[in-house]
Structure formats: structure tokens, C-alpha cells
Amino acid sequence: MPVQAREIKGRLKSIKNTSKITHTMELVAAAKMRRAVSSALDSRPYAALAWDLMSRLRDSTAITEGDSIMRFFDDVKPLKDGKNHTTIILLTSNRGLCGALNTNVLKKVIPYISNHKDEVIDVIGVGKKGVSILNSFGHKSELAYEKDDSAKDDESIRDLVVYVHKKFKDGKTGKVMVAYTDFKSAVMQNATLKQVFPFTKNDDIAAAVDNIDEKKERVEKPDVQFPYVYEPTEGIVLEYLIPRVLTSEIYQALLESNASEHSSRMIAMKNATESAAEMADELKLEFNRARQAGITQEIAEISAGSAAIS
Amino acid sequence: MEKTLTLKLITPAKTVFEQEVEQVILPTEAGEITVLPKHTYLVSILKPGEMLVTADGKESPVAVAGGVIEMYDNTLVILADSAEHPTEINVEEAEKRAEELAREIEQQTDMDLNTYNTLQHSLAHEQARLRTGKKWRK
Image (cartoon, rainbow over all chains, first blue to last red; front, side, top):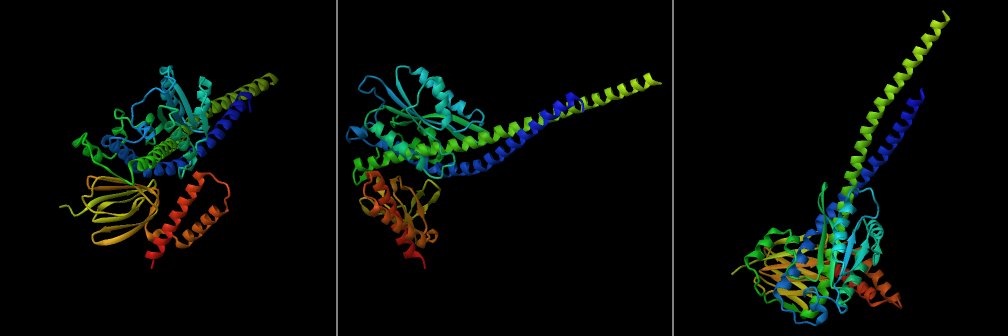
């Protein structure tokens, strides 16, 4: 076999091997995606209703409790040092090869950081990729967790929730946001930066509610002061409720991110497999051409040799 | 006068109930309460225990874990950590789990308040499942 043809054959083989790997990864991602998507969809009503409840309480309750609970409903205010403090919980994947997923989330977070130079911004990273990209951007994360990318319950985020809740309650941060990827469909994911604390009136909470009936209901009677009865007391109920809403928000963000990660990886791997097949086809043509050229040349040499003898 | 209220019983895993019911009896932090149609606006804390739902004259029990309840506009929203029908409960397993948890609580000598509360809460939940399961399984 001529040298050129042999070289092409080597490349062809390596491409085929790579495409086997990407194809396997595609199948693995697809299986994980099915699970992640169903758990994200199943817990959506819970998260939406919890958030909804919080906004109804906020609209209807004249908060009379002490400072630590009041903070959760008040406007964002600078802390004692005169600066605004923001905590961003950043959900990204642990591993790469998942298309533009992490880049898209960071495209929301990095401009926020650079546009708010006067604010103190602490980032809590969940997922290795986000932490390392932010590091290279020059912003050290306050805390870094690994993302539980096949989460079945909220165990992996419990510590984080306790920490963030305490931090806000103790007045060490004025605003808590979560950056994640909202799962719309296998081919559509939206990077989102959402404010969780405080539950101020002017943020876009209605957008987080996907239960249309309830949205309508609230439009019909805006700003009615519902006389909610709290049992046993307002303080105890809110004290109990606020961390739960935070848990449900972050857990939902985690599930949405997982669903997005796996579907995005699946699509990325599918594309890789497809383009590998395309490259392999092209190389095969090239290989055949090179092989034929070699044969033609050999025949030419032989016939030239026999012509010289006779 | 409305005869029914809308019950939404939702856990992070699934929507257990979303239907019109006549009456709901549920365990809360401030004691057991009965919610009838047109109940006043209310927010309270759900305790692990047995919940009794009456729909179309039939009573059906549900074992619930902790959570939050909200009554508004003739709709009762219950956000529970978990909720199971007695038929879904594996009594033997619940019994074993409850024993294990009780032992774990006894054995721990120094643990922080959070762990303790979590364990106590899980124990209460298992016991509630056990009670409901035993009572309604024939």
C-alpha cells in the first residue's frame, strides 16, 4: 500500500474510534436526560406553588415581625459598610463536552459582575466548570460544591441552603440570586439569573409561575389585602417557610440544570458523531483515490519496466 | 353556599391530589384542624401524621410528612415533603426504619441540633406512616 493511503487509513481509524466514543456518550447522556427531565418536570408544580405562596404572602401581609424576617420582604439595601452585597449561586456542570451550556450561564453572570463593580459579589459555585471558568476570569468563588448531576433529593444542596439562609438572615448579604439553565426542551435551554432573596415586589415573580389559572386569578384581584391567619404565629410560620422556599427554589434550579446539562451533552455528542461520520466518508473517498493512484502508478512502473526489457 | 373546596396536595416528586373535596382533616403544628369549604385565609405548618380527605362522601387517608399548608380563595394548597396512600406504604419497612432511627437517636452522644431535628423529624414521619399503614391496611 502506498504511503499516502496508509496515512489516510490511520486517520480514518482514529475518527471511527472517536465516533464510537461520542456515540456511547450520546446514549449515556440520553438515558440520564430522560431521568433528569422527568424529575425536573415532576417537581415544577411544587416549586411554582411554593414561590406563588411566597408572593401572595408578600402582597397581603403587613410584616410586623423583627428585623431578621423583615429583611426577606424589604427592598435591597446597602449593608453596614455602605455597599451592596450580592450572593450568586452559580449552577454549572462538573464536566465539559456539553456544548455552550456553561458558557451561556456565565454570559449572564460575568456581565453582571463587571456591571456592578461597586457591589461586593460573592459567588457560590455548584459544579466544577463554573468555578474554574470564573477563576480564570479573575473572580474567586466564596464556596465551591460539586454538582450532584443525578440528584434524586435535595441532600446535596442542604448545606448550601443553610449557609445562604443564615448569611442573608444575619445581614451578611443583601441579595441572593441563582444562576442556572432553565430547561425548555431537549434543544432549547435558557440561561437564567433569578433573584431569590429578598422577595421584593418589583421583580419578575409572575414569570416564574407556569400555572396559568393562578396567574389569571391574581390579575383579577390585584393588591387585595388578604387577611391571612397564621397558625401558630406569623413569626414561627415564616421562620419555617422561608428556608423551605429557598430549598425548593435551589433544588428546582438544580434539577433544571441537570436536565439541561444532559440534553445539551446529548445534542453535542450527537453532532460530534454526525460530523465524525461525515469526515469518515470524505476520508474514505480520499483513501480510495490514493489507493487507485498507487495502483495506477505501480502498473505504469511495471509496464515501463517490461517495455525497457523487450 | 359552596359545598366543595379545591385540594392541591403536592410533593416535590409528584402531584398527589388535585380535585374538589368536601372536607380535609390535617395535623398542624397548632393541633389537628378540619378545613371545610370557604375556610378563611390561613397559613400553617403541616406536621408528620395522618391526613383524612373526604371526597364524594368517601374518606381516604394519606400519610404526610412535614410541610406547609395554605388556604386561600376556597383552595387548600398543601406543600408536603412526602405523601402516600396507605396502600403504598410498606409497613414492615417503615417499622424497620423507625426502629433504626430511634436507635440512631439514642446512640448519638454529641450531635448538633440540626442533625437531631432532622432525625426526630424522620422518626416522626416513619411513625406516622406506620400508624396510617397499620390502621388502613386490611
